[in-house]
Every structure is written in structure tokens, then in C-alpha cells.
Length: 257
Image (tube, rainbow, N blue to C red):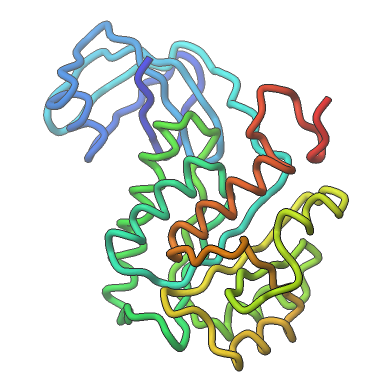
């Protein structure tokens, strides 16, 4: 059954009008019409099965047939703080991070970020990234799309998480004693992880010192030099493999049953 994203799913028996891009996709691209059953999902994780009653290029009217349970979420809530990247790399990172079950993506700028966004471009880009996150969430059948937060500075990011009790990590290419694999396997699983991934040029020594002072622990992904978007994807995959939901078995607080 094809999945579509809406703002809110009403109660069983009620009508819902879908407009915008989703309506166009249903009517023009997929050529769905009256009688076709579809699955609806919203940002709160609610799901419902619906039947199309009428469809046009501008709107699709459906009737909610029944509520459906949402897929389970990962036992570890991961916030990925990602330095701004060039358009293609950023889009790829948003897509794959969403597929891998990240809870929130916080974008930021720092000393070596190549991309600089004014407020207007920042709002437009954030909207674009949210659309990518929604589409990736539908494709990967996750309960709800991740939150994508407008860009801030590295200093603002560190201040936001200063008093956070979650495990706070940042990937740093100059870290030569602690790696992510060893840290995760040597620690008890936690419910929340905040991870910072820098830009193509990495962090300066001054920035690394500031992040550490904010309570973040520097870790390495090994001896290969990875592109920033690759490092972010690998970071999330490793976390989900060790403590999350990259398994067919039930996980409770990161422990497989």
C-alpha cells in the first residue's frame, strides 16, 4: 500500500482533503482514483488506512477507514548535528540519516564551512531538507520524519546542549585514542545520543577545544579519512547497529531480547 504524508490524520469515518505535492503525486504521477486504498502518516507518528473518494490535480479527498499502529521507533534517540555541506552532499546526508532513523538533524555553520546562508536562503533550504526527510521517511516506513532544525552557529549548538544528559560525541579526525566502536561496546546503552559531524575541512583546534569544554567527547571512526556526509551516515549506522534498531529482534533500551 502506498504511503502519503499529511498534517493530521482524523478519526475513522471522517473525510480528509489532501492538497499540494502529495495530491499531485497521487493523481498525476500514480494515477490513483476512487476506490484505491492508501496509507496515511503524520509527523506525530499516527497512521491510518484510507479510501480515495475523489481525485483531481489540485486535491484528493479520502475517507479514513481505520487507524493503524505505527512502526516501533529506535530505542536510542539520536540527534545528528551536521555542519553545512554543498547541496548534493547535504541532500544525500539528510536522506540517508532519515532512512537510518535519526530523531533530529541540527544543521550548523563553523569556521571551515563552505556554504553560508542568509536568513531567506536558510528558511528555503530548511524547507527543502524537511521535504527530503519526509520522502525518505515514507520510503523507509519509519513512524514519523525527523525534525530538521534551521542552521545555527557551532557556539550556539554547543550552548544548546551544554546541560544535556545524553551521551555527547563529536567526530574529530585528530582523535587518536578513542574510537566510536570501542566507546559503544565499552559502555552501557543510553536513551539519547547527540553527535556532531564537522565540515569538509574539519574542525580547527580552537573549535575542538570549545566543543570539548561544552561536554562533548571526541571520537574517531578509524584511520580512513571519510567525507563529511559519509562520516555522518557511518556514525548513525554504527549507533543503530550497536544500540538501536538495525535488527529483526526486539530491542529494549538497546539490549536485544
